[in-house]
Length: 533
Image (cartoon, rainbow, N blue to C red; front, side, top):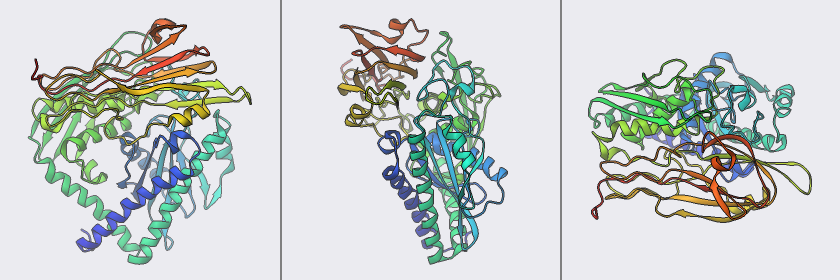
């Protein structure tokens, strides 16, 4: 029970949120790569001293929820941090995939440990078999990139050079990655300064109490809001459409039991873990499940440990939603971070359609490439993800050209791409006709056409190329994603050009100078039968 009056509780809660927003701006203004500075593929949060999330910024949903497992492990390994310590990890079985590097700084006020400032961000390269990641046919987690165990990056304010040197010796873009890491460090440093200022005004005890009160507030509000969702059992199944090596489909079976006390999400019956990186770790699947339940119940409740306490998840061991070493899990933030929440939304669609949307493009459409700079001979490594159509709802058409709901990533400007990556962008626009028809239409996907000014090597990790986004209450499905290549005036699917097993999961195919790479993202499903039908 908080000793603070309600007004002070809210002042502190809002101050904590504004601190995470300042962390975002600090990261953007000091970042090195377009993935950070333009794409906003990072997230920020504050945790209390026991490792419970207190407040999160706008960001990538799977980033933020997955920090729960990583921070619990970090607190257990380093139970007595000192001022000036900074910890780092990208262990995918604690959080998300290897490219998402977590930096955590203990916050000290008047020599007392009060919490942690945390930044998680996607580095453009993390080593592994594919430049920029996205090796759609990797078969071992180490092929996906360097794994950084829970480590100290700074000890009492002094850089642990061995940790830094080891990391940078195993990536293709050490300058880019170090620059982005410095932006993450800057964001956590500014957060510590802001919390120290808060403590100077209200006292250290009030800061600690305010963090606890923020968690209690979210728990109480969410518990009240979830009573508006009918108790009962909600079930659905969706699929990962292939694994890159075969046409085998991987079902994701979910059963959600809603009671007055909370939600139990059970994935019993889901497929065993796949041989390729379409798997999710338990922590990333749980983070995606959190995002779905929050969207259904009350997106306005500040997301933190108070909400997480009301959501329990179970998943079979060594399944596609709870993969274990050495299963590759690079796609856990790409495809499974979309498929898990969409399956949960689908489960609720029949009984409470007003709380969900139809299916979306639901893929990161993630591609990574490598070219050679003709002036310097150095590698040019890029990574990108593409926005698509959102499903329609009972109230409105779906949004055009958005990233998956729960994400606040941005597109990367054409000017940056043409300047850095030896491409000419010939087209960037909406994909007309891609949204599913209905009383309310699904949102439209996008079209991107890149003329290559040098040879490129391309890797891809996507989905929803064969299984179209589903319609809701009689609405029609949206168009699936599609990746094609135009060479010498002939346009064919990438899979046809290169004899690939999968249209969306492959590794290191050779694209030639003057080829035109075409990415068409899917549209959202429609809602209700069209009045014209």
